[in-house]
Image (tube, rainbow, N blue to C red; front, side):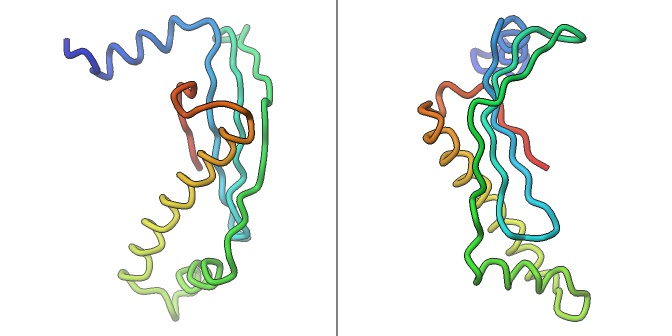
Length: 116
């Protein structure tokens, strides 16, 4: 098994007593990314989660305008949708780094990032 294989990562993750996660969400209001650092201990029914830090990473108005263009079937194109997809990925990355820094942590201390 390779040193950095997914199986090794999952085994280490599953065996940790405490895991630190970043959760990211952007809703249809397109106002920004809600970002949180969450500390999870235990597993299954005994799992417990603690909110470490939360922030909203606001979208600039120019970004909001681009997102609203892809919401409208009259203005959405495959090109605009693709560009928005990549742009959101970059914004989610920035939001993750911002909330981790605000929590006084480094990305190396984060075990996983989830987004919706």
